Image (cartoon, rainbow, N blue to C red; front, top):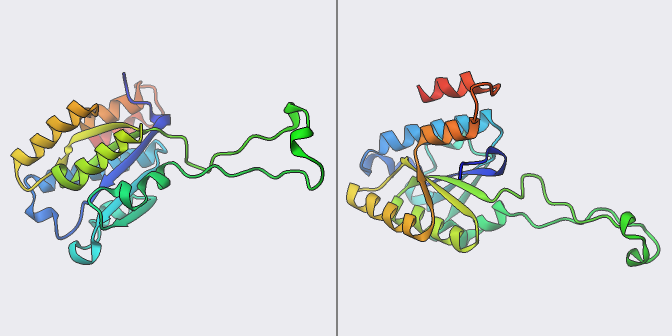
Length: 206
C-alpha cells in the first residue's frame, strides 16, 4: 500500500521553540518537518499543526507555523482530546433546500445530498513531530482509534532520548501505524518522474 496524495493530510505535532533544543536530533527532525510541509504545499496537501501548552513551551518554530493552514493549541497530550478530529473531519453541511414543500416528497434525482466541508474527506494522516513517545504517540493512537490511517515519518520525529523515540515507533507499528521516511513520502506522493512538481520536490529531498 502506497500513500495517496489526494487522500493525505499532513499533521505537524509540537515543533515548539522551547522544546526543540532539548530533543535528541531535534534539529534533524525539524528540518524534515519543514521539508514535509514544503512538499505538501507544492502538492496541495492540507497541513495542520499542533502546539502543546504554547504559553509554557512557546509557539511552533516560525518555519513550521508559516506552513500550516491551521494551528491547534492544546493542553491534553493527545490533540484529539482538544478538537483535532473535528478539524480533520469537519461536519457535513446541508445544501440549500427549496423554501416550500416537503423535500422528502421530491424525486430522488432532485434531492440534494449533504456536501462535505472543504478539505474534508481525507482519511490518511501523515505525521511528524515531538515528543514522539508522549504527545505525538498519544495523538497517533487516538487517530487510529478514530479509524484514520496513520503514517509516521520517522526521521521527522524526536524525543528527549533515542530510546523513548524508538519505543514509541515500536508501539505505533504494533498498533497499526505505517512507518516511513521523508523521502518515502516524497516519492509516494509523486509516483512518477513526469509529475509537474517532480523537480521542485526533488530539490527539497536533495
